[in-house]
Amino acid sequence: MTTTSTDIPTTGGTSHKELAAWVEEVAALTTPDSIVWCDGSDEEWDRLTQKLVDAGTFVKLDRKPNSFWATSDPADVARVEDRTFICTKDAEGAGPTNHWMAPDEMKGIMSDLYRGCMKGRTMYVIPFVMGHLESDTPMYGVELTDSEYVVCSMRIMARIGSKILEKMEETDAPYVKCLHSVGAPLAEGQQDVAWPCSETKYISHFPEERMIWSFGSGYGGNALLGKKCYALRIASAMAHDEGWLAEHMLILKLTSPEGKVHFIAAAFPSACGKTNLAMIEPTIPGWKAEMVGDDIAWMRFRNGKLYAVNPENGLFGVAPGTGYPTNQNAMHAIEKGNSIFTNVARTLDGDVWWEGMTDEAPDELIDWRGDTWTPESENKAAHPNSRFCTPITQCPVTAPEFDDPNGVPISAILFGGRRKTTIPLVTEARDWNHGTFIGSTVSSETTAAAAGAVGVVRRDPMAMLPFIGYNAGDYLQHWVNLGREHADAMPKVFLVNWFRRDEDGGFAWPGFGENSRVLKWVVERLEGTGEGVETPIGTVPAEGALDVDGLDMEPGQLEQATKFDVEEWKAEIPLIEEWFAQFGDKLPQELRDELDGLKKRLDA
Ligand code: PEP
Ligand code: MN
Ligand code: NA
Image (cartoon, rainbow, N blue to C red; front, side, top):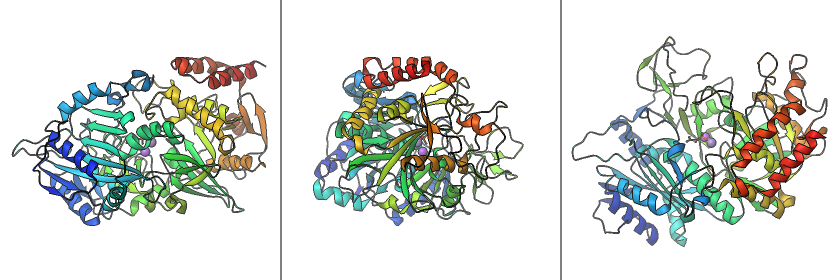
């Protein structure tokens, strides 16, 4: 980029010289009509949401206070993993699981795309912090974007505005540079569309420079750069360098009937019920569950323990399947308003609806494509990846510790997948390296919801496959190394599977709120009271150790849900070997040893 001084009308500014220079440099390249420094105020929200209503991007919802309905371009509905790049100097830095391009080459391509790309639009400067401003090490970012939708969504998902900028100015603080454009410049007099975007999309990360360049998409994970791009991909690279963990995990607070508190982090690939577990309503008497986070955990060592912070300030949840029967806490959060709904259906009286919200669909809706929809329609009313974007503090089960800048001490990590066979309801890992092995082999069967063959086992290490911002082999070694350096601080690790099937093909375990019974056993294991049986794959609940009081299960069903089957596991070994093969000599020796140990135990 070349630096030229600009005469672009600007509202706001900064005494942070390096930031001022970067903003000027980007403005010279992208040539917006005006520049606005976001203050994060209610007045700003009102002004920008009104601008989006006027543009046809938002419809104000009469039945939800201060809430808006948006439908995207039908080609801009999800994260674009095939257009997502890790741009390290060497290809090895991105590893076998990421797309790679050399930084200079990517910057050349994208600078050409960015040249003049904000013409006819306003460039917004969003100062933000992931995690708490009061943290010992505030994690700053600044997003430059030409999308009002992005500004409003970022205001829900992160802490943004003047307070952040003032604190950055005090120390000329370093920050992650996040550049975003929808890639749709407007010629003089050209009428805008409701959802501007470009057919050409790049979501590029420069971990060595702690920088993100995004072009062409307005969708959440591609455009709200504080979330997946910073808090997972860039932060995972920072965490590797600095000795902490940035993980795709929910954070749950559990209180036993005796008032004992445990905090648990859990990683699940998508479509495995992460949001539901984060907001679980325990079915067992006296147990209380509260949410600290539903998607991302930043975990650092402090006082000999591993403490987790949720870096976000909002929920960006998949709407379909979220309803009163399955997740009333999410529904209550949404009822309070102050939300943006994208690609769900709209009712004629100004509310939202999606599949799974209620048992019966309304008689008539406007679907996510803007067409009239009735229960007879063939298409879904809401896009399967439609989202609610809602302040986390509106959720009735958000734990008070959410506000603690130091986070919460984690005593257990859960890994889970969606498997019809093989993986029992719950297994405790033998130790940290075995837990890392379990995490590194997390697997799910593909469902009909995703393109491609159904029932194929896919691996998703720590549910981080799309989010590791560097070489996945180095990432696994980082997990092993932290366990060696902080042996006493490490949480116990458990593997869970809510999705095992019985002979009739039905789910063997009832799931949802009943998963609290598994959490209870986990807590009892932490406290040394839960009884377990050692098997080659780890410790499973002893007979009678899992509290199934009052649970109406068919004979043999519990056994089916919880059993360890040596033949199923022998069949699993070649799949794990195939998965590990791609890492070559980057596969930690410790994980090779774990696989060998498992094989020996299965053969014994
Ligand atoms: C996203 O797609 O923007 C996102 C938040 O990802 P996911 O919910 O799939 O983790
Ligand atoms: Mn996620
Ligand atoms: Na999410």
